[in-house]
Amino acid sequence: MAKIEILIGTTLGGSEYVADELAAVLSDAGHECNTYLDPSLEELDTSALWLVVSATHGAGDLPDNLQPFAKQLMLAMPDLSGLRYALCAIGDSSYDTFCEGPEALVDLLDDAGAKAFVDKIRIDVQADPVPEEPAIQWLQSWMTSL
Image (cartoon, rainbow, N blue to C red; front, side, top):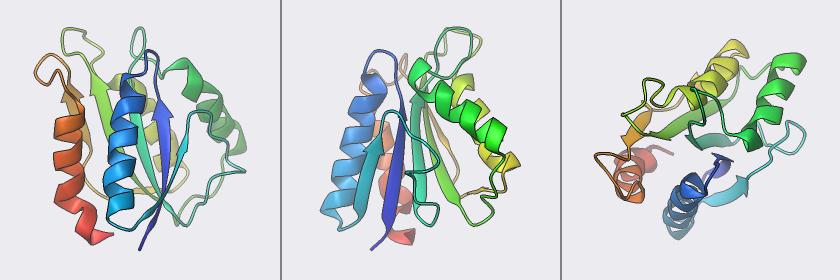
């Protein structure tokens, strides 16, 4: 089974609920999951799949809890060419910066050589007031590929 490092970007806790549900589905399927609200490069396993579950804050920014990690990536410029990641972005389409916050983190991962494992999902809380549901459907659509 696979090892998954779940990086959570949250302001009000919604993304954390989604991440917890995804971790439960993955764990039930026999995968090893670790969740991080304050990740650092030193503690993350680069041989694992990184699952980023994040909201957008303010004017298209990463939530405050993920900004130090993004800065660490930018400054360290690590070689992550062996890393695979998946993005579950959560936002509100009534804002013109819909789901842009996590995209900044993905850009940094791409710049470091990481590759997307699957197509990202962008969950709109206007259309899906229970974002856990589309997130779980998305996960289940590719989880057997782990």
